Length: 625
Image (cartoon, rainbow, N blue to C red; front, side, top):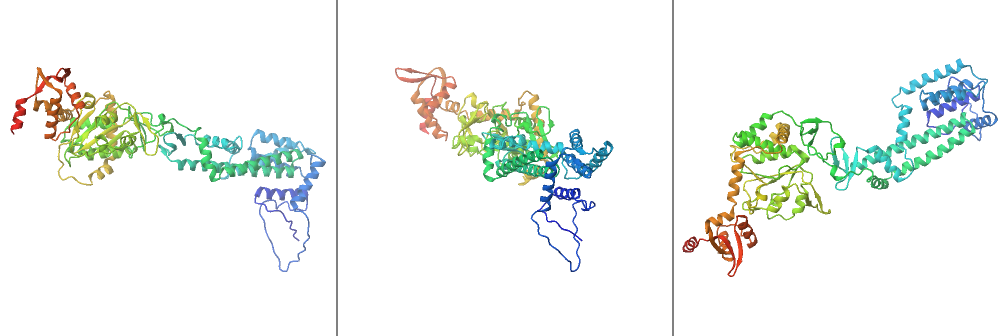
């Protein structure tokens, strides 16, 4: 004969086994060899089934039995002592581990046995339970009590509020997410801080999911405690267990709410102040370069491990390498005609662009006819620098610039800025030059954003076939100009050469630049002397010395000479127009004369210049022609 007792739906194996064990304790006819979680169904032909309708599940009957037992006495009577203590020992070992606390609870429970069990028997029960616990602890999905408790506490907010949830998010995502006013949310990729609000939202969702998982575990645990208390404990334990269940249920409902879509932006908004980092901290160390293989100390060339505390928001496109270095050196020899002094200068300059601080207020102008390799050199350097490199339109450096502040915004945080190809005849803007090649803070603005200012960290290179005209002769302009002449025509240049160069020797290019940075630093942040560079600048300056060209063509100099200001300016205008020169206004013309040492004063006849006069003979010859 088989007797079937209906029970409520149970999905927890431990709870199901607990019911069987309780049945065995309460009813001696229950098979003590069938206490595990397995269920077997046996059938016969034409069974004779008798159904007896009842009003309670077997679990309700057991509950009533234990409540009656609890009300009558707290003692564990003979006949149920061993099974009760075995069951209890297994529970507390799983919950507390094989600890002094677990053993203390076991001994306390044993004191309720009537009559008391022998010490040897209790010790045997404990050892048996410890063996069982050892098997449980060896399973893959088992979480040790100390780890579980730590994890559980870490993800449980102190209060069930949005602010507490923001604090939990902050606690578990320090070093993974930061907030800055200038760039918003940044996410740590493991190598750099990346501008990505979506990835930070993903971090929040992961945190909220873990909070929900822990809340679910707590609810199940407290519910199990209540079941245990009802089966084995006293009234006080049941009251406490019910309170825990209610608290866990509130936590579970809160955790579910925190996983709602509408909570994501709200919690992240609260977390901004908790994870805020000042803009000045981003890429603040001028002497480190972030690469795929680590952070390089440019002073020593030492490679350090990536660390979020460096606050690097940029990374090079390639890792430094010495592979195929000869290919890059051969390229430099080809474009410089084998000029080692020029190659050394280019190396120092390339190294200086890696440093996030301006030591040389300079604009490097690389010029030469097409097909001479200048674009290959500087575009290759820009490519390997990855995030550290940027571009601005060449027009922004000239007097034709339109959206100057927008163009200047592109310089923010960069180290290598490239501009290419000015049109023939365009004039370099002295005011723009003094902004981009300066240590002074730069005012800029991005479209649709408020204006801002930043400290420059970049070096600028302009490569062009046509040198722009320079209208100013002041020292502040010319001390900022560095000219690199590329005059060697490359025979049969290959259109795809730069792609192959980067593919094969990209790491070597970066390695060469890093070596150049250390050499530049060791040299006191000064470029080495280079004759072709010095000569090119001298020639460039002489070609753009418009005021002395005018004086040489149209004037006579001498301490006894004088000339009326109006006439001198009129002759200049005619000279500039006939020579295709830009015609400057009277104020700029006067400033140029003063810079050359001439003085003007007011007389009865009007304003006149001293030390200079119009060469009337030259003027008459021009009129005759």
